[in-house]
Amino acid sequence: MPFIMVKHINKTFKVPIKASGIIGTIKSFFNRKYKYIKAINDISFSIKKGEIVGYIGPNGAGKSTTIKILSGILVPDSGEVKIDRLIPYKDRKKYVQEIGVVFGQRSQLWWDIPAIDSFNLLKEIYKIPDNEYQKTKDELIELLNLKDILNIPVRQLSLGNRMKCEIAASLLHKPKILFLDEPTIGLDAVSKKIVREFIKKINKQNNVTVILTTHDMADIEALAKRIILIGKGQILYDGSLSKLKKQYDYLRKITVITKDKVHLQKPYIVEEKTFEEGIEFVIDIRKIEINEFIKLISSKMSIIDIDVDSGNIDELIVKLYEDFKI
Image 1 (cartoon, one colour):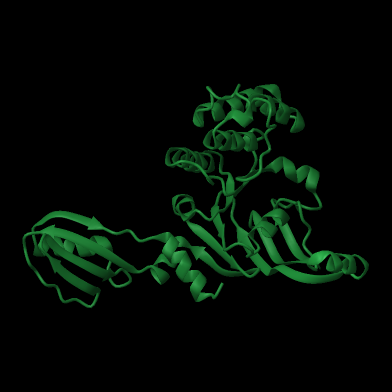
Image 2: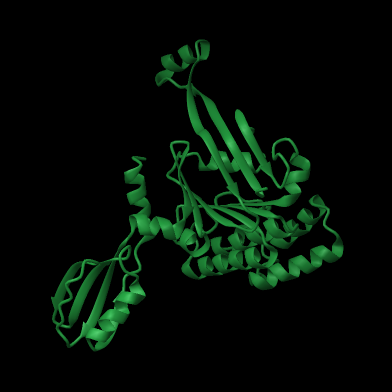
């Protein structure tokens, strides 16, 4: 049985229509009109224990609504959700002991006190035994390099340091599932790398299941082998990132610095340009693997240097959005 099972869930929101101007506001007060927004429409998927899944889509696609249902905050209008045999919105008290949630734009830390005080308070909320808390806290402090910032009020921390503290806070009770909503938003390159490496480490060491929603495609590429693409409340793609790349991002530019002037007319070479320092190839990786192509050109010419354009996941996602018209 899958660790996370979502079957045919739907959620519609009733939103009041606000008229402009004073007269319109008065009319709306006595005769309020509403519109209905279908946030998610017949969504189904399953996730194995220990998977890292990227749950992606444009603004308004239904990502946040899905995550709120999975975390037990919202109840679907219809359908079924089971996570580790619990129903999040029915078994809420027991279920929240098993999840950790990090929202990049919301904080679970108390703003005016040091992070360590928030950690101690969360220990009491989750009723974590003293020995277990001390051990987990020490591990998190070391892994995320928090020692020098724990006694500084949260409001005085940089965004990068605050996010590291947020992640530590969400893991103190050793959750089985971690929901990450824009975990690296606003972070510098160094902080992003630390956070990504840490997520990979706790996933591998503790078999924590991670659901990641983000607009930073570098996060997806670094962490998730599988992605679920949602648009207009429906799942448009559910599969591996590598398969998606082969389907939508199959051209690679390979620049070879060489003194040899060799022309290779092969069906997998889409474009070939000769310039002063060497040759630029554009190949179709559906027809030939990059390493095979490099072996081939190595046998045909003396290579001084070589550069392989690995593709751009942001462009890939834009192509997907265009293809699905979202």
